[in-house]
Structures are given as structure tokens and as C-alpha cells.
Length: 407
Image: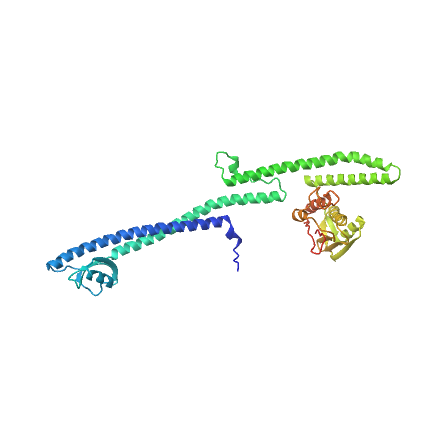
């Protein structure tokens, strides 16, 4: 059987609070025991010395035949048996025991070889002193533990708040918000002590700035290349149209068309990266839109409508997303390919080898394909970017019986 603790039980603040509490309790217990033992030994020692001193005087008076004073008796019945045996054996000793409901320090020694001469010293005051000391130790320990716990929790909470803020910024960066920064005030003031949390925050900010700079450079390069290629490709396309009919001309036109498609894809990606895309929303029946996409693709794709809905969306962008998914399924998967509309959820399914592991785990990456697949990896990248503009969620998964199914 495994005990499942609540999630908050594993936080740094709780662990620190438990550690501080345990250490304070251990330290308070150790100091309390040391003080209790020291004071008790001192108190008992003083009472023992007083009792033995009176016993010595009583022994001298008994041997001289003088009358015994108050509290001095011969072989009283309430004398502890162990102390009686010690006195009869010729030894002197002391013991604290209850007498008439009060703690009493007994001192006993030999009298005439068969009886014990005893002295009683009231030990009530000393016992009350020790009890009061124990209560004071408990109260002071509780107050000290509480104060230490509060101060420690305050200090740890300040650190954990900074750690939580750093973690939130890291999550924002992982979601694509490269403008997110921790901006820990300690990293901006060199006169303040730089602790480990400040070092982590500074490293995260530096990493985000470097990553943002590299991505911006890549985006500018992609946009510049696409724009520079667009003009000569337009002229090349026009020139290819003037070539005489024949197989070489078909090959040239096919390659020019592929280059134009690649250029347009790069331009679209650069616009998505720049965040300049704006929605033109309208009400669209999802089933009719899906059937229009399949007809426009010219592929043998089955459209299955489980439940049709009218969605508020940008028709052109949604057609672009579904068209890219259907084209990718036919290009990299195997028939049969189906497009299923079930309410607001659209599933494109093929029966090929499925998506690569990296794509399922991290999503599509531009200019990356595996397994000898043809293409530039831009179709799914554009579909994902347009889905984000639409506010839709596009996921990629492999079916248990084979094939890929983006949703």
C-alpha cells in the first residue's frame, strides 16, 4: 500500500517548515533536559547534604544518650525498606519518598546494630521548584519554537515566492513568450548580496534574451530570403510558360511550381512569426467547410460527419489548416484517409507509419523530416501557426492500430 501525500506537502516551504520545527524541538528538548538534570542534581544535593548533616548530629546525640529532636526517630514504620536495610547493614544513605502525601528527603544510618536512626527533611519546596522549572522550560520552548517557525517560514516564503516567479517566467518562455523576464531586483543592484535564486533568475533572463535574439535573426532571414526569391521566381515561372511542350518543359514547370510553393510557405511562416496575422471571423458550418476542403484537395478522402456545428472562425485560415493536414496525410501516410467532424473537433486520420517520435513529443519543426520523407516540414508548421491564430488547439498522435491522427 502506497500513501499518497497532497501536492502541497512536497513544496520547499513545507519541507523547510518541517525541518525547522524538528530541529527546534530537538534543540529545545536537549536544552530542557540539560537544565532539568542540572537543577535537579543541585537541589537534591543540597537537600541530601542537609539531611546527612542532621543525621550526623542526631547520631552523636543518640550515642550520648541525649533526647532526639524533632524529625529524628528510631526505625519508623514508614521508612523505605531499601533504606532501612542499608542502615541496618551499617551504612548511611538518603532517599526521596512520599510521607503523608508530601515529598520527603529521608536520611538513615545505623543506631544499635538492629535499628535505623532516621532524619526527615521536608522536600516539598524543592519539588515545587523543579516542577515550576519544568513548566517554564516547556512554555519557553514552545514560544521559542513558534517564533523560530514564524521567522523561518517568512524567510523561506520570500525565497519560494521568487522561485515561483522564476518558474512562471520559464513556463511562459516555453510557451513562446520570449519577452517574459524575471527581472529580479537583486540582479540589477550589484551592492545587494547575490544569492542562488538571483543567479538562476539572471541565467534565465540571459537565456531568454539570447534565444529571442537568435529566433528574431532566423525570422528576419526567412522573411528576407522569401522576399528576395519571390521576384526572380515570378519571372522564372513566366519564362517556363513560354517553353515548347515536352517532358523537359514539364519537369522545369514542376520544379518552378515547387519553388513558388516553398517561397509562399516561407512568406506565410514569416508573417506568422511576426504576429501580424488578423482574424476575419464569420459563422461557418464545419461539415460543409470540411467537405469543401476535401473537394479542393482533389484527394480520395472520406468525410465523416458525426455531429455538425456552426463555428465562429476565419474560413480561409481554417481551410488552410485542414488542407495542410489532408495533404500531409496523403503525402506521408497511406490510404484510407478520413476527415471526421464531431462537433467542434475535427480529426484527420491516415493508416501510414505514423508521426515520428520527436513530432509527437514536441510538435512539427520546420525543415525537419525523418524516415526518407519528402518535403520541407513546413505544411504542419503552418497548420500549427494558423491554428494558434484561430485560437484552436492542434495535437498530433499515433493511433494504436497504426497511422497518424492530428486533431
